[in-house]
Image (cartoon, rainbow, N blue to C red):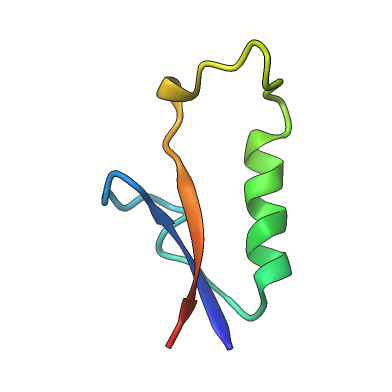
Length: 56
């Protein structure tokens, strides 16, 4: 199976054009992107919301 990362706003960027061989690789990339955010003081409006999807 292959996986992609999509944005909820439907836009494309350097992350959404990647294809991953497994879910964990996609998750690890998103974890790197969001690792500097703390839930209590994060302003998520400054960053797009991503979702990992399985390619059919």
